[in-house]
Length: 278
Length: 232
Image 1 (cartoon, rainbow over the protein chains, first blue to last red):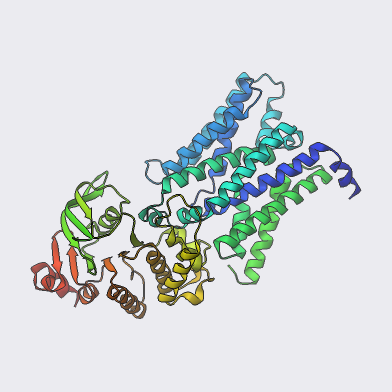
Image 2: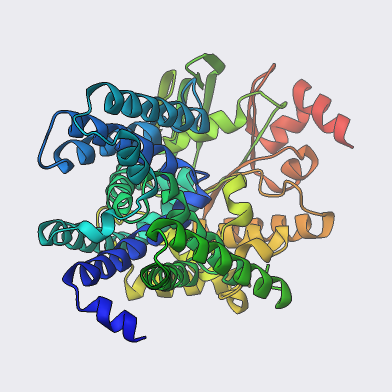
């Protein structure tokens, strides 16, 4: 406990915790929609795209990498959600194609053009998030906070419409809801969340932040509202405890958070079985 | 003036026309059953009427106070809905999204309308229940209540009794008949020609042969005699 208080004296630890909690909150909100729309892997696909974009930004020696990463990821999200069911390459194959393609190009770029002496170290920390969350400066924290607030606000305002287009797209379209506009909005919000979450857990583990809260919550709750609320609480608690454990035990932040989520998922699963809710 | 008048309509996908030369009209208070073989284009026709799909030719004219997007639609089940965590109340209320435009919130009047329709269909005691745990018949009632929240004029039902047992099927037909008597126009896709002939005022038969007219005319027609005879 004393060790924890001592660590909390450092501003970068406090930043990390604030940002971590916000990211966890955002990523859990749209998880339910993604899982139900059969897009669980979109987080994975987009994070690889973001990795590729980050590699390009790093090679171009840009000081603010967000300038490239955010637009590229948003564009890919739009492409992936838009193509949906009506194209020759179906949803899951499209995600797999874009994600591994971007990953390969990103790594290639980093190897060929990188100015850094420790390429594999750079790659590893981008993929698994290692310590990057602890090295955020106040500017990045501000950006994270602003984007998180926007994501939460958009979600609350359009909560009813998100439910409508998730539960029954055809019905929504038949009664005049602009389904494609809302899908576009969902895609953009997802892309923003992915880029934010890369700081916390790295690109390979982002899917966990998106799907575990939703899946755990669906074991226990039965209405859309309660499932959404519980996933938000689940996600915040898991990330917070994951970060605290990693600070105290000196383990990598991203994988500790995900490990906590896996354990919590099984607890929810067992509770669901015992109480006969699922 | 008919609520819906269809002239020389052709429906289909980018890959080709599924059914064409479709002509019929629906007036207020009608009960029209659309019948035909599998793959005849019944669902495609309904999707075209709703504007979910572009028409391939011809015209659809809406009239008699029927506005675009004021059709209550009861679709077939989708795979997403099988494990969707949603309560009955949430789903019925989502029918009120019709005509909301960009207003993202539901009003007190919307919530009252949802309650009223749940009561009408006898599901008001399950408002908090989980949709995926209901029986097939109850699920159809929920979707019907949602469709009623979206319209006061016309219901479009895509095989509402598919997969229901005979008792529940009979209840469902009774329910739809009651709604029709209240003045709501019904258009229904049906596989069940015997019941279609029993309940509806008009029949539209598409596929290898085309027929549109009242049920009495259908029974007397060659095609009607053939299909009704097959069933009984």
